[in-house]
Length: 67
Image (cartoon, rainbow, N blue to C red):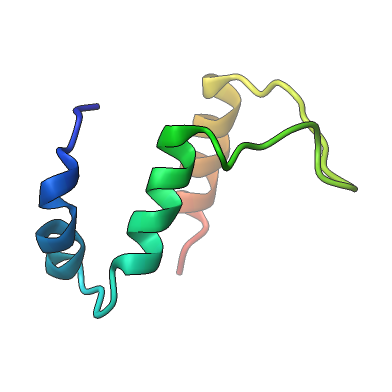
């Protein structure tokens, strides 16, 4: 992870294919300044713990079944 200076966001987002990066810039400002935050769990959401090994086993198994 690395900090991306705000004054480079416009060019970066456009290079990623965004035609209008202003809404994304505002969203990032909201998270960075703390006026957008997530509190609690969304209705119907569930949290659990899954090991890396379990995920990798599923991915490896699925890759053998691809035609």
